[in-house]
Image 1 (tube, rainbow, N blue to C red):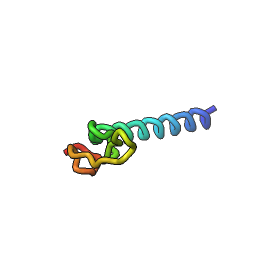
Image 2 (cartoon, one colour; image 1 turned 45 degrees about the horizontal axis):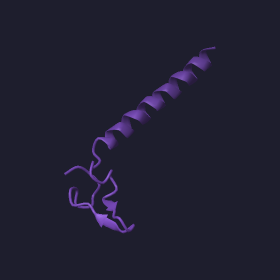
Image 3 (cartoon, rainbow, N blue to C red; image 1 turned 90 degrees about the vertical axis):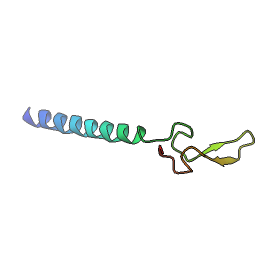
Length: 59
């Protein structure tokens, strides 16, 4: 019984850390290009994002 509780606690801690890390990455992404550093034009070409200068992160 105690093993099950320990395994559940480890899985819950891993899930918590994963969501914490992913949310910190999402908050630094450029909102104009969704963190890609480019946006696709009408003909499918990739245009460099001028807001983040192609880095994909907020200036």
